[in-house]
Structure formats: structure tokens, C-alpha cells
Image (cartoon, rainbow, N blue to C red; front, top):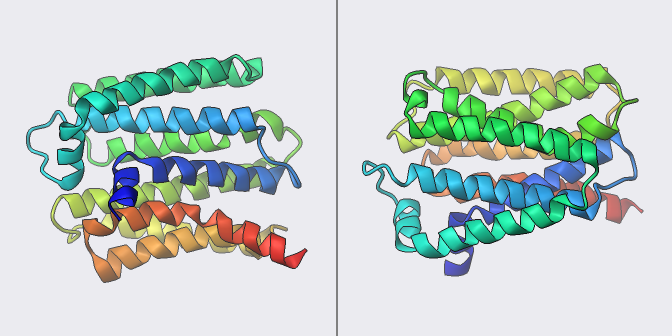
Length: 260
């Protein structure tokens, strides 16, 4: 159990969830295909590095007090070495990426640097939920980056809807645990609006597009798990379950194996 808790504290579950959803959206828009291994690995190390640095910055705040905060403070030197190692691996992987992905990745990198500058200088404290919205935008852009560059003949409207659907899913997670970290969800109107928009959009995509329900089920399953945390468990201790919810594409691939 301690081993899995360590993986959660190091955001490994976030990384794996991102890679699985990248594979799923690739399957949706490029049927029968997976992202090249170097693309998935680049996403994995990029997401991992960003989350570790984000945690590192957050944990400089003395007001924080949690098991996650204590873990990062206790192992700050080891985590710093891990960040440096990840960056070196990421730079090595970049050599093997197509130029268009490198260019787009650099643009996302600039957004991340701006995001960190805002985080360090306290800009996010001035506007409610701007941090969560910014994080969800960066995360969603990273997941769909390969699709943006390769699915040129895809239905643009469907692509925009799927991007917004995943954005809402990421934003639900971030806003939910922000409320729980702030000792309550009494004023959770924004979270309920996100949940309402997600349900309406998911149903619209299901009934007005040609996508199989099995391709859309992972999105719904991840959403429902967060609903359970919001309305039933109501505790930040289930954050690891919220991250494991992003493993839901495994159910689609399990179904695909069984059906064949």
C-alpha cells in the first residue's frame, strides 16, 4: 500500500491516465491507430515533469499541511534529481519527434512557463478558479496535441466537442479537489455547472454523432467516479481514486479485446 501511495504522491497515476486518454482520443479520430511510442513517452515525461515542478512550487507555501506536502518536503532533494532526470530524458525524446510536434510542444512549454510565473507571483490568488482553468487548458492541449497535428481530415466540430468534453472532465477534477482542500464544498455552484455541462455535452455527442457508446464510456466512468467523491465520500483522501479514474480507457480496450 505504501508503494502505491508513493506513486500517487509522485503523480505517476496522473501520467499513466494522460497516456491512456491520449491513446483513446487517437483511437477515436484515427481508428485502428495508436500514437507512436516516442510521442506517448514524450507526453508522459512532459506531464510528469510539469506536475512535479507544480508540486514543488505549491509546497513552498507554509500554509499547506498534508501528507502530500510532507512527502515532498521530506524527499525534496530526491524529487529535484527526478525532475532533472525527467528533463534530460524529455530532451532526448524530442530528437525523435516530428518537427511540427516539437514546434507545438515549444508553444505549450511557453504557456507552462507563463503559468508557473503566475503561480510564483500569486496572480492566481486574485481570480477565482483561474488556476484550475489554466491547468485544465494546458492538460487538455497536451492530450490532444498529436490529434491536432494528424487528424486534419476529421470532423472539426466533433473534435472541438471532444476537446471541450475532456476539458470539462479535467476541470471537474481540479475544482473538486480545490473545494475539498479548502475544507468544504458548500459554495460549489461552479462545480455543479461543470457537471451539468458535461452531462449535456456527453449526451449530445452520444445521440448526435456516430461515435460508439463504448468509446464514450471511459469519459462517463471517470466523470461518475468524481461525482461519487463530490456527493458521497466528500473527502480529499479519495484524491488517488480521482486520479485512477483516468485509467478508465482500459475498460474500452478490454472490451475491444473480448469482442474480437
